[in-house]
Image (cartoon, rainbow, N blue to C red):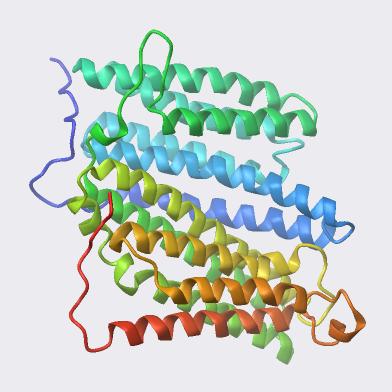
Length: 410
């Protein structure tokens, strides 16, 4: 008896919410993001304080690992948004991604030293197995061609991942960066392969509501990570007024992130994707946007862990970039998100980003005049005040008016 072929789309009838196995998959990312934060904290608090260059290189390597995790999550989310997630083969793909992500998370702290091979093998297995399994079970030629191109691409970049894993750190960073760049460009241009052509993204079949929900859920995972990091850091040393204030500001910042995200645009992303002329185009754009927001939220979590550890100490290189730059990156992503849903951007986003950027030199003790006030805690207190201004501006704009409908520009 032949195994039934997965349909091109999720079933149009019945519930389209994320399945239990998908939510289980997301739980792994809670752990993986905490490992990202732990690695960045170690770089900034222990290594990055030595020179600005070590802070930059350490942050760049951590970002590289975060982008690899995101590639795994996004590829899995798109797969379950195109095909029936209750099919046994699709569940197998999700479970392989779950195990692989867990291995990657465990390997993250020492990915550029002793556990690099484990990280690379897990990543390659996840990325190669997904198109390979679908290539075996799909019967329609238009679907098989895309999976074949993806399989060839990930097999080629997999050589770079595995080769880099056995080389010294600098060469490893170079090859892994090149591999991620090639994968990103391949995705952007429809997975082109000589002799096999390329596909048009606008023609990809996805279930817009499900994909939008998955983006919302991964944002909540990142937001939950900020609360988890802040709570763990404070619970280790719950004494002292400065640390209590640092914990309170971290919690308030997380609440404001949530409020700014869900203020209308975050609620109706699914409607925007459905209304778009080409749902896959806005879906891909939303993927990049949520990556920007997640990077901003994770950076903020790292910053508040630094604040809790050294609330009134001197800011080291890169600390202010996390404490103030993280929220600025989030707001930039949120501005793009607003454009994707409504075709316009509120001025409050740009004003808030400008204020956060201007605060960076003031709260970095580069001159004796500012050294007395330029503490991590001062930067941490400034952040929720700026975000509160954005949240208030959003509430005032919507007050007494009918709910704004999605108007995607795509």
